[in-house]
Length: 408
Image (cartoon, rainbow, N blue to C red; front, top):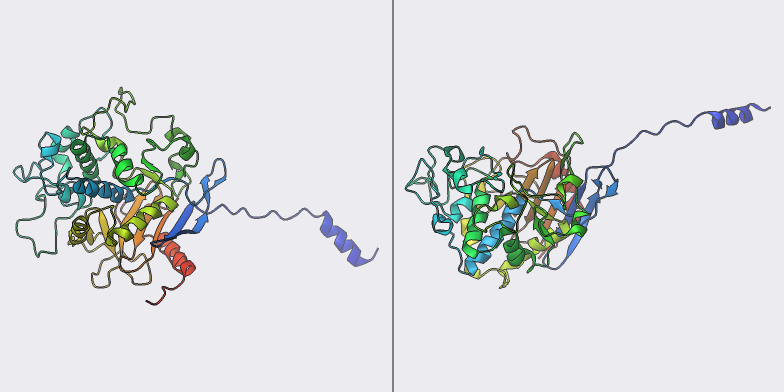
């Protein structure tokens, strides 16, 4: 038998080399938008590794602190309805005193809370389950920063600098509860009426009101180790999806608005797909176009509320739950997400192995929303701010996919 034929037969008889297993990429979606259009740029990975279900562009995901921006829009629309005043003592709405024990004579306002300048502690636990007292939480000195006056010092360094900024998730439950007390509406229904429904968006807080069809498309959040962190089957309806005190029934029908809106996780509990989140970004673009969504004077208030915080890392420019990043004249460590040097407004998100963002160029006509999962926590732990290499690489891909900005 010829040698070349023997060699061929030997190859056929040999077992095939085992192919190296390549795990799927983390669930990631990036969507671009402008005033008129929305288009997915990157959609990859598995929404659920147990069922091997691929993620889709509008699968609902917990967007973490971008939820605060949604809450801010609801608050500003209540301002337009004349139901809340950003500068009024929140105690007037709640019926009990909200005071820092270190400054018992200084009122606390929505504007302070929404700008993280109310003197609240960033280390305090912000989950207040159904059946526990919000009033007791804010009576606890551990919820406040000693020596920090709500609203800043009596003699700030300048009109544009607020050195008493400290990012705290604890303010969001109080803001949401004030909105309930002022309107008489439950916070989840308030957000639906004022934000989601007018913008044609399907979204919810803590899965309340999203419906089984959305829950079936939930993006499961995994930590970088592969461990399930949030929104696996046990976290979804018909199971209880709100924090509940031991021995307390998971019963929202008997909940009294204005008592404890922490149960809806206003600091980070919005579930929404990126195509729908982009619609909220579009609404922000249209605020300058005589949009009926917010009155011009309210939009103006949003603008001048954006102030320097006195920090030098990440949250350098912030106001009313809107963040400014990438400004070339306002040096800030950790806020360079995009390599094109264009300043952007929006909000970042980070929790349960997820990082997310909604960012738009206020002087241009292009924005991005995104999330990516299985991200290792930053060295300082969650909610410390700063963009990761993963996020920067994603935005570099996104900028390349959309191409250069057209000349005016």
